[in-house]
Length: 184
View 1 (cartoon, rainbow, N blue to C red):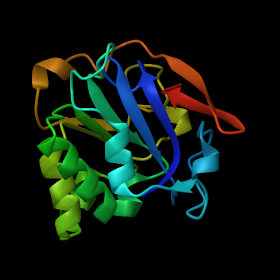
View 2: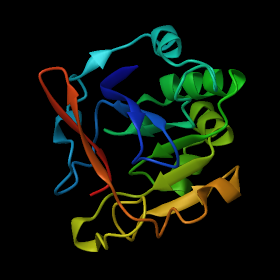
View 3: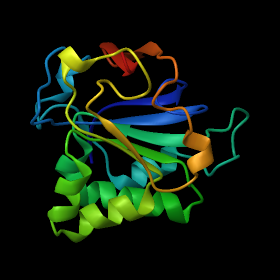
View 4: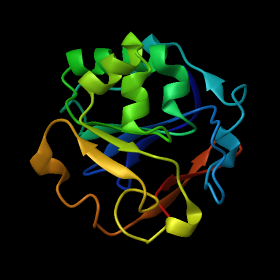
C-alpha cells in the first residue's frame, strides 16, 4: 500500500488516541487541501501490508493504548484492494474502531460492484464521504465541509457528536517535512 504518511498517536482524526494512515494519490485535488503532497499517485512510500500490520499492535498492547485507526488521504479508495485486505486483517486482530475518509460518496462506492469496496464498507465503523469543498467549511465536526456525511456502521454510541465536535489540527514531523493531521 502506498502511503504519504503515518501518525502513530493522533487525537484529532476520531475519538481517542488513533493511528492515522495517509494514503498516497488523490484524483480530487480539493482547493485548500492541507496535504497536497498526497495527490501524486507515484509519491509517498510503498509499504507491504504485513509491515503495516507489524507496526500496529493489537488493542491494549501499549502503555497508551490506541483506541482506533483512521485512513485519510490522499484517497484511500484508489487502493481499494490493499485497503480491503488491510481493514479485514485489522478486524481479525481485534480492531473494531476504524474510520475511513473518502472523496467518493457512499452510493458511488456501493455502485462500483467491486468486491474490495464492499469488503471495506463491511469491516469499518465509520465512513466520512464526499469531496472537501472549501466554501462549505463551517468549522464544525470531524468532517471538513458541510456537504460531507458521516456514516456510522458500528459502535454508534462511540461516534455520537462527530458532526458537531470541536476541531483540532496537529502538525507532525514526517521525513524531511511536516504532515498536517486533523480537520482545519
